[in-house]
Amino acid sequence: SGVYTVGGAGAQYASLGAIAADLNTYGVSGPVVINISDGTYTTNVWRASFGNISGTSATNRIVIKSASNDATKVTIDVDGTSSDNYVIHFDDANYITLAHLTLINNHSSYGTVVHFEGTASYDTIRNCVLKGYTTTSSSTDHSVLYAYGFTGQHNVIINNKIQEGGTSIYWRGSGTTTCATATTFHGNLITNTKGYYGIYAYYNSGLSFNNNNLQRSST
Image (cartoon, rainbow, N blue to C red):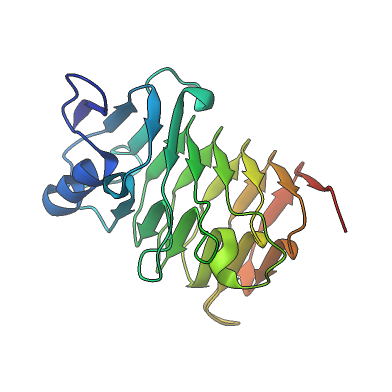
């Protein structure tokens, strides 16, 4: 539990990947706030995968945000790979919030920004900029927000700018009886120069898609 600083001089952790590794190993005993110092971070150690972290709950939430509460002040710009196609990975991760961050994956083949997997639930992305590679590709490797075979519930994507990618949001459950459940997309500005889908949603139960603005600037 507690407040931790990541990045910059005097920080407790040098990278987001480093604190993610400790959280995955040791878990939490109370609420955690991770403040990322102002700056642009471009090395692979800033790619972070969060698993089912022990101790997280509605009370013991992990909040990862810019120290200044300004998405323009913190940019994590990391290219995806065939094995790690994400900047942030929620792999059965619960009760994590991303806030006031700019996350970019500009790889020409592997351009996912946030990957939700397994049963990741009660996670929130708010007031962030999520930017993928500009492409006409229909490949799911170019989904800015990506979930496939996903059975998580009560995830909230609110008041973000979701930009570019072949698909801005690809959100697919596992089957007719094993759906992604009660996902909320609210108040997002979704802009794409020439992408294939704005949103692709399949095998969802109780999905809420309200007050989002979808814009495409070319045909």
